[in-house]
Image (cartoon, rainbow, N blue to C red; front, side):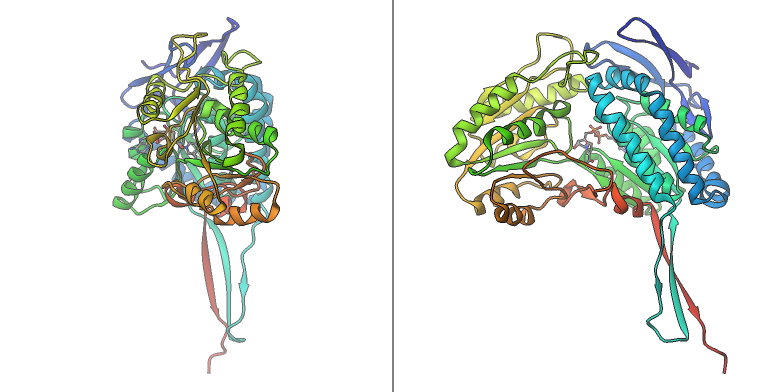
Length: 501
Ligand code: NAD
C-alpha cells in the first residue's frame, strides 16, 4: 500500500507512469495511515487503480507547509512579476504534456479524448496565462477626500492559505480555475481533487514542481469528501476555501467553515439552467446550440441547459429538429477521436440519472428519444441523449439538477410567462435566450436571475469573464478580475498628516 507511483496501461497498450500519492511540500508521499481508495474507468466499469487517501493529519502537514511558503516565499519575498513568470512556465509544461494529460483525463473522467485535447486543456493553459498576465497589474486606490491632514490608500493582499475542493466533470479545468487566480494573487494552496478523478491533479502538481514553484506553494491531497474534504473545511489555519460541487456539499462546507475559524468561502454550485426559445429565433441554429447546451460533456455540466421553454407556434417543429440532433450525437468510447459524448462518471451517477428518467415517465412527461444506457458498452456508465416534452413545473425533472443528458421541454405563450418559468427554480447559474428581437433579448436577459445569460448561443466561458451563481447556485465569482479579487483582502491604510500643535 505504500505505492506513490504506478504504471497505467493506456488503451493503446503502452504504459504511462503516474503519481498516485499525496503532494505535500513538493514531495510525493504516502498517506499517514497508508490507506488508499479505488478509481474506476467510466467507459467500461472496470477498476483503474488505487490512490493514497489523505488523512486529517496529512491535511495538517500540508497546511503547515502552505503557511510556511506563504510567510517566507510565495506571499513574501517572491514578487508578482516572478509569480507571473512561474505561472507562464507552468502553462508551457502543461502544453508540452498535453497528450499525456489528455489521455489520463479521458480514461479516468470518461471524456472524449478530443474534448480533453481541444477544449479542456487548452482552456486551462489559457487560464494560467490569463492570471499570469494579471498577477503584476494589481493596484489599490488612493483616497484623499478628507482634507490635507489625512491620506488613505488601499493594499490588495493575498488572503493566505487556501483550501480548494473540486468536482470530477472538468478535472483539469476546474483545477485551473482554482489554482491560477490563487497563485497569481500570492496565496498558497491545499487542493483536493474529486475522489473520482484524482489523477490529472497529481500529474499537474508534478509539473508545478518541475516549473519551479517553491515547496509548500501547491499541495495536492487526494481523498474522499467526508474525510479529507471535511478536514480541509474545518482546519483552523486555512484562511479561505474555494469549492465547486453540489449544493448539498456546499452547505456542509459553509457550516464547517462557520463552526471552525469562519474562513472565507466561495461556492460554485449546481444549476438547472433554462433556455428560452422565441418563435422569431433561427430554428436550426437554436436547436444546434440547445444540443450543445444539454449534451456537451454528456450533460455533466453545472450550466447544462436542462430546461427548455419553446414559444407555442414553433413548439412541435423545434422538438422535431432537436430530436434529429439527439439521434446524431457522437456517442462512443473516450479513446475514439470521433467521440463527443462519453459515459457518465460513475455507476451511482448513471443510476441517479436513470432514476430521474423513470420519474419523468411516471409523472407523465412525454419521452421523445433516449432514456436508457448504451449497447456499445453495456457495463459502461452511459445514458443516451434524452428529451422529455410536455413537462410541467412541478415535475422532479424540471426542478432538480439531474447532471446528465436529459432535457425537459415545455411551451409558453408570452414573454412574461417565459421569464416566470425561467426563474422558477432555486438555481441561477446559466440561462439562454434565442430571439431575433434585440430589445426582447435585452429585456429577458435582464429579467432572468442568473450569473450568466447567453443570447443566441450557449456555454461560452472565457477566462476574462466573471462566472458564478445567483440564488442557490453559489456565492462569489470565478474568472476575470473578479476571480482574482476573491483571493485578496483589501486593506485601508489611514495616515494622519497633521502637524502637531
Ligand atoms: P460533490 O459536491 O459531491 O463533490 C465535489 C467535491 O466535494 C469532491 O471533491 C468531493 O470529494 C468533495 N466533498 C464531498 N463531500 C464533502 C464534505 N462533506 N466536505 C468537503 N468536501 C466534500 O459534487 P460532484 O458530484 O463531484 O459534482 C457535481 C456537482 O458539482 C453538481 O451539482 C454540479 O452542478 C456542480 N458543479 C458546479 C460547477 C460550477 O462552477 N458552479 C462546476 C462543476 C460542477
